[in-house]
Amino acid sequence: MQLMLNFSVKTITGIKKAMTKTMTESLSIPFFVFSDEIDASKLIKLRKEMKASNPKLTLLPFFIKACSIAMTEYPIVNSQVDNDLDADGFIQRYVIKHDHNFSIAIDSPDGLTVPNIKQCQTKSILKINDELKDLQTRASSGKLTATDFADATFSISSVGNIGGRYFVPTILRPQTAIIAIGKAHTYAKYREEEGDFVPAEAITFSISADHRVLDGATVARFATRMKQLIENPNLMLLNMH
Image 1 (cartoon, rainbow, N blue to C red):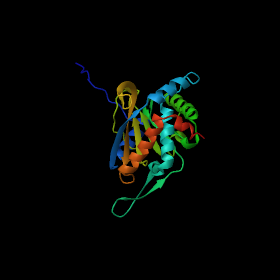
Image 2 (cartoon, one colour):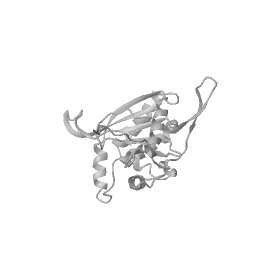
Image 3 (cartoon, rainbow, N blue to C red):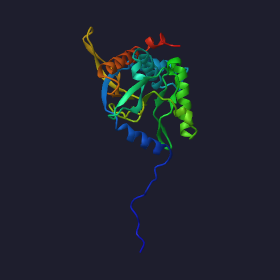
Image 4 (cartoon, rainbow, N blue to C red):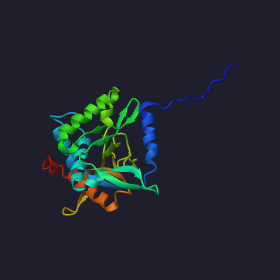
């Protein structure tokens, strides 16, 4: 009599193997998490207006640009840890990167992958959107190259399209920070001058930061600046290159 097995064994290879290594190494980072909520009503309205001429425009490029602008004011967030340890086994230095090469978490047939958009500080929201779509297309067809993953300095994970509001994102070594963007939801916003409540759109986010390099006050200031830009998206137009 032949026994039927009630399980299947899968071998971890390719992108999944690389991510397994990265995630295992990331567990060695002492980190903290900063979370907050953004009133995204103006941004969502602006995106709807812009979609008339750019139907594939998503919210993510706005967050990418807002993070890049905030990073010019708090450049330490765009750091990489030098893994050369001292005699006691601790890191000795970190490197602040000039280019904002943002890793973007993208689903692919082989699992989650994190190619990056190069030099976000020099690009418009529409240009970032175009490059994001290109990465997503090539990820879905297995055509990403080593160059797409090289020299990443910061990570952005937009998991809200799947579900959930708050997360504890995992830092990708040797980067020092990552932001996870949650799902948009409607809430009742109190207007103090009018003394009433109106419906508004909110988006939550969480930033994990390497506590060996970044302190809570710096990350809070960076997040506050990014939040200001998202809540008042016209301010980003003053920072377009």
